[in-house]
Length: 339
Image 1 (cartoon, rainbow, N blue to C red):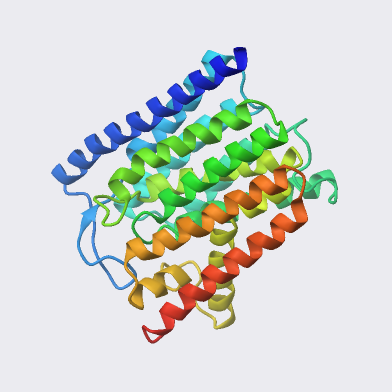
Image 2 (tube, rainbow, N blue to C red):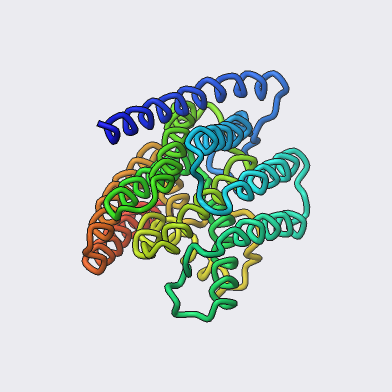
């Protein structure tokens, strides 16, 4: 009975979170349109019509507000939680200025490094991210570098309508399922579920054809929050789950980075060379590409649940197969565009 009541309260909280983000994004859309804050098409973008940019102004504060309200109400938050909230707010503020004025890359990276250091300082006692295979100092350093890379790859991958909203929704749902199956702490079920609900509320406005974009103010702190949740899962022994859920984003971004590095391209510059972008250029609509990512992520969620239930290696193999099939399909459509 107590469990049922708790689940009902959590369901109501998730519903309210989704509605709040839906309404907040609608309000922000009006403001962005009024003040003409648009993402203009250019040679590196995947859209042809100027659209409002900055939907993260609603999404990120409302996620942090929802998380904080739940933590205060339940009096139960993961270690370091109250360091994550201001760190994410810092990233949102810096990224919003970057959306408007294009800040130097070094300044953006410095803000991310500060946020990551603040977040990792709260990991004491939670367990080792790399399961004891690395000495403590190297474990923290490797986790910091991985987290920084995830923040940036999440930003890089936010290049067509709906894709990052789908990714946030999928990772949130997958972590909620895995944490429940693995019997992790209740807050490791609650926080990703609230984030998933927020992503769903945002997707109403961002699903192809999108009416507004996240902007860096959304994608950078969202990558930060998702990275923290994934590291928490890894530190609690669910490293296979933490690898499986973002596997498509990890694979596409990392393979693209390797390809650009090998040919001597300036890897910090914006581009349209990810497999999903080239597939869109090759003829697939944004909806078709995002739908394929959603389908693949559905398989990854099932694999993550399988891993959490006690079959990690078959789950990991299935996840790699699913991502390989998606990448091959995207490359096939990219080839039609002459890439």
